[in-house]
Structure formats: structure tokens, C-alpha cells
Length: 321
Image 1 (tube, rainbow, N blue to C red):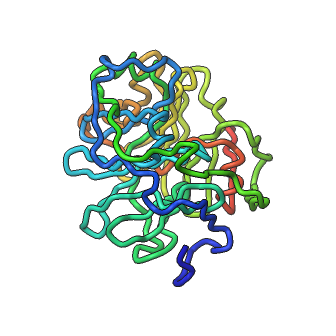
Image 2 (image 1 turned 60 degrees about the vertical axis):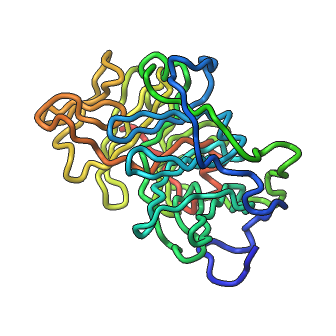
């Protein structure tokens, strides 16, 4: 690893696990088939993206092997990044300062989390913090794409015409090609502003640099549940339905008006705002005066408690009042 130049995170916590950059090759020319024609198991984990009415799904089993998929929907170029150690996936806009780049597996970890680099400049990025931590783009925060985790059961039941990743190419992460391992040194714990996090339980979290706001999965039952609140100067919505294994988040500044209410028994339609606009899980207005509009995705994802504690300096656990 290059120790020259400034890093936004402590350099002594950057772990090099022994393989050269690109040893695990990203999928740069992904191939897809229809969900209705694929044969995954009902409980197989999927990451689902959406842009301009187009839905794509990325099986975690493939992401665990390749870690990064460089893809696009129309003129929106994005990367789906996945960290096998933390089990977390995110979608990033890969148009940086007007130029499209590709994200690549670097061979570096920060607190056991994936640190991709971009091919155009060689800058390094912290996946879970959604932040450039070293290089020409340092301190840049890529715009998130719409991405949420679910299972194949939900996907095949409601979106059979979506596309699902099937083709791979290049080297994958296997026992013989990479030496991924958890750090043997104790990891830094976050400063908690609420009850202690359960290390082995999943939480959905909204992030802003080194801060995170967490939502336990039990908050999203029974039925659809929607929460509106302020976070780091933005008005946010977190909505979910545990029975369908889905949690999503959106920014609402200049968009949804008035109180947001959950809608039951209409999934994948999940909520309505004070103007009478009705939204689906992708944040699309499917009926109402602003039909066709979309909410801006929030920067959030699911991870187990131990990952949130180790990657973020400050963590707040949301409490339903």
C-alpha cells in the first residue's frame, strides 16, 4: 500500500490482505436473464436496483465471488459493491466529475471492509462509509443509486420481468485466489447514543460520513411501517415490510408533502403523502397529482451490529416513540 499522501482514515488500520489489485476481477460486462426464467432458491439473497423504470437484481452468491459489478441503466452508470466480510452491498454512481470510471477490488480493507479503487484516478473509497478516503477524489461522496436487499421469493413474486445477473467473467474470490480474513486486532467501537447494539442482529442504517442511524428489523412489522425524521439536515423516510424482507430509505426535501402514512395490503405500493401521492418501494409516485415523479434514494443499507460498531464513530439506534 502507498503510504504517501493523506488518508481520511487512520493508515495503520488499513489492512493489505496479500493479493494485488484486480486479483479478484470485477464484472465489467454483466449478463442478465429474466427473473421468471432463472432458478434461484426462494430464500437466496438478492440486491435489487432501479432506475427509470428498469429493475435489475444481483444475487449475493455472485457478488460474494466478484465483489464489484460495473453496470449501467441508460445513461446512469453505477457500481454495485459488495463486501463478503461485512455482507453489505451498496450502489454508487460511477460518473465522477463528468467522466465515467470503473470500480475495482483493491486488495485493501479498512476495519475489515472493502476499499474499492477507481480505474481513472486510482483513488480509494470506503464502501460502508460511501466516501473517498485517499487520492484525487478524496472526501468525495458518490451519489447513491437505488438499491435494497431482499430475497428471490419477493423478487419472483412481484417483479418476474426484472433482469437478474447471471454471467460472470474473470477471476473470482475463492480460497485459492484470495486470503480474506478478519483482522486479529481489536476493532474500534462506535460511541453509542442509545441502547447497546446487538452484534449479531441485522440493522438497516442511514449513513453520513462517520455517523449512522440504525433501525432494528423488528420495527417493520406487523405490516408496512414508515418513519419520517430529520437526519444531518435532511428530511428522511425509512420504510419497510419485514414479512417481505425489504427496507428502503428516501430523501424528501422538495418532494413528498405533509405526513407520510403507510399503506397496507397493497405491496409493492407502500405509502402515501399529504398531497395524495402514492409511492411504491422504489419511491415512484404510481398514482396521485405527481404521478411519474420519484423520491431521491437515501444512503442506507443493512448490516449486522458488529459492522456498524466498528466502521462508524457515532451510531444512534432509532426508537419508535
